[in-house]
Length: 128
Image (cartoon, rainbow, N blue to C red):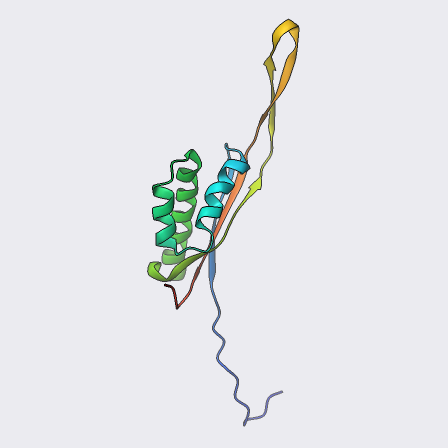
């Protein structure tokens, strides 16, 4: 129990907001290229990076990032200019399996991979 003379520092609680896209029909390896490109960047800068990246995965990653930014602004009242991508990662989802016919009556197995994308944004004061 604290006595009346002690002073405690005010707690500044960092709010992190996330957006998740599950069962995306794209391989995690392709999506991770875009996730690594935006990790640690300002949110508005990350939007521009994804918008001008010449990868199919960039469009999907852009949607998830914009969803996280919208969640931060609408649900938590954070400012867009101060948002930073604190985490961006891609997990492997369930893999669908199929068969591809080959020569001489044989078959090869197909792996139709899916992904779970998570983007977490935080508000930071001293953003350059």
